[in-house]
Structures are given as structure tokens and as C-alpha cells.
Image 1 (tube, rainbow, N blue to C red):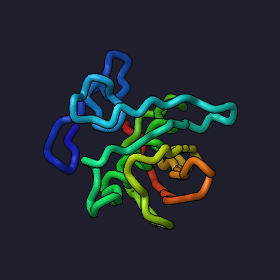
Image 2 (cartoon, helix red, strand yellow):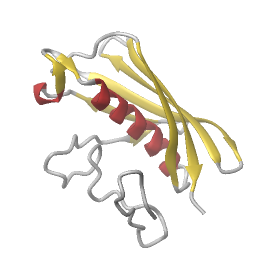
Image 3 (cartoon, rainbow, N blue to C red):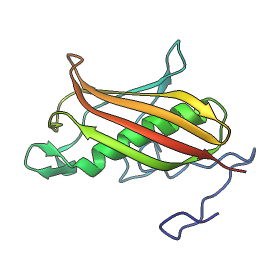
Length: 144
């Protein structure tokens, strides 16, 4: 299978997508974020994150592309945890406040609904006080 970058996606042993080198969540990707997700009682996926200064776009502010990445990953984790092999087809992010590096943050992603092969998901990025910094909406397309 080809992605938008021309790179092939690898399938795992059970047909699921392999995330062994995932930039966001793989523990073996040296340049990755190493996010560790846990499933909550409602099926949402959550992770703690303290972004490093080397992820900044402007001094003290995490690059918007990195913020988009962690939100996308949070939704992808929720989709994957539900047993669905799917890829992001559409992503929309609303940046509500700047995301500062070096601060403890919380990520949460969940599935809103499913219509045939389309899975609608949302994610939040909040600070240590629960203040929403960014919100994302996506549509994932289930692989055949």
C-alpha cells in the first residue's frame, strides 16, 4: 500500500498496520516522541506528554505540525485499539492557545461514530489544569 509520501505501509502479522517505527509512539525510533497511550474506561486513548524545546517553531512554542501529529496519533490510537485497520483521510485542527514546550500536557483521542468504512474521531490536547490548547477532528478510512 502506498502513502502520500510514496513510502510503503507495512502490514503486521495479523494484517494490522505495523507501527514499529512510528514517529509518535514507537519506543525504538530514536528521533520519535515515544508517546505511551493507555485506554480509559470509555475506550478513549490517553497519554501524558512534555514536549522538548527542539520541537519548537517559535521560541517557547511547539510547532503546529507537531501538535497536529500528536492529535492525529491520539485518534489513530483510538481507532487501532478498537481493532480497525485505518488511515487518516482527513484532519482538521483548531489551535485554541499556544502550546508551550517543557510543560506537562495531556492527550486524549476517541471515536465519535462509524459509517461503513469511515471512522469519525476527535482528540484534545490540554494543559496540566485541563485547559484546552488544541482540538482535532478526523475521518479515518478503513483499509480493505
